[in-house]
View 1 (cartoon, one colour):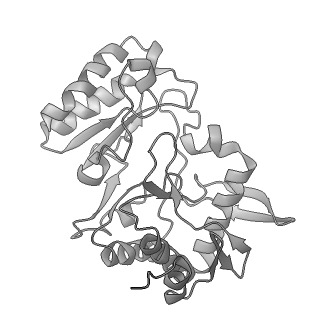
View 2 (cartoon, rainbow, N blue to C red; view 1 turned 180 degrees about the horizontal axis):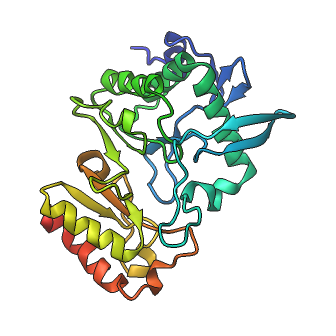
View 3 (cartoon, rainbow, N blue to C red; view 1 turned 30 degrees about the vertical axis):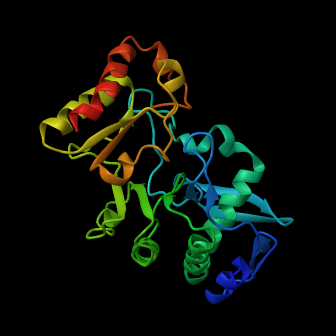
Length: 275
């Protein structure tokens, strides 16, 4: 029995595929839109990202400067310092190659949602993907874009999808789906779901007391806590919880230097028994 090739799978969705690349009229041959893991989320968990924040980027692509608007409705800031605290503007996200890749995906989303939808569906099938994190960087920028993702999630019931949003218009787009979860970045009290140790601990206790299923992600700080690394491939909390809290990292704030850090670590280690 003949095994269908990736090229044939992509062709069924109207996408040209050759030697690990897909063809776009806008940019020529590019990498498939979903990226297979990284050192934080783990290999086997694919992710899709766009340009973050609500700022405008000037990025050179194929010898031409493109002006591209970020896909977030806001830019995250540290409540205490007022400084930008978006992790997706720091570290590896500052590499030119990463910015160009994010810009290409962002432009394709703005200009040709049907192509993006078909290219993602083809890759999910061709690579037999089972875990997909939507927006390691970026956010839902419109209802139409969010509904595209709902169609994708509905089409692949055996794939687990999750994402986070600060766009309140899109918080309920996945409602009724058992394999897709949208974690709200704004908490019921109007606070945001990341910050210093005291903020994370206070929010965790408040959410637990109100009966919400909540999880503290220790990505980015586990090496300081002596906690074994736990990737998204091992932890499905973001796909299951009402709220997920994050300790601020990749900024001037150093969680390990916070006097409350040891107490927060104990809370993290105990949380699986709480839920």
